Length: 293
Image: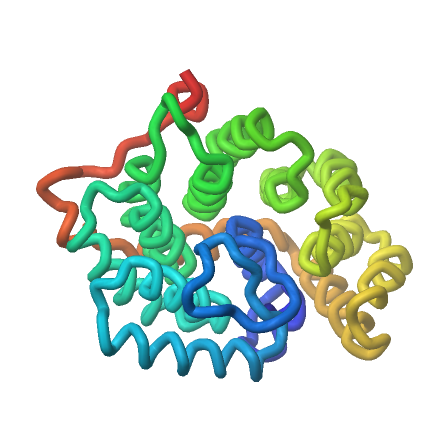
């Protein structure tokens, strides 16, 4: 998967947009080395190489076309599509699967995450609560719900979701990373930094977590520290460009106004999911405490 900041150059995005995008990336499963066997479990490691991901997408796509009702093949295919940022295609695959397995929580979780990554946030907010139960809450789904709430501008609710996820999976680096970014979005930068420092210190922390900390350090004006940390995973030139982009954003009259505008724009791209419309007529705002009771 591309680094959080590296996406800016490819997509022409401001760092504030990347701050929001990073939240959804934290909800994905971690990515390891090597290719994916089309028959592996959904939480198996995905390759980090773009070439390997594209190879796996082609192989899984062929198997999916032969038997689109095969749940495991479809879920693995959707995961690879998401890793390739082919979000609309991942939504199509998981939506079809959810129509066939409307009560399967694993399927609904994949569908909800794909919707969220495609920017269809209110649909995701409707589907994700159906992907786990109060008796058996999922830390991964809670983290995804938090990412959606953050992008809808409800940072207090988002942070409650992340804290609930951390009760299930203490010190999980992706969740801590999301929580740190949420604090940044709510302009609590010192708390964001300390949370991300804790995330980086965890054994499972990867490049994305380190780059998120570098992003927050730059937002605090700690440019040298941000660039040094970024260079652990990026070339010196790319690290310097990322820090320069943050400097440019901070130089605006009100950089946080740009984040609020992005929140509003993203939240407006919503429609109701068709196949679940009768079962869930409107999105529920579910508190994390209710989920864990």
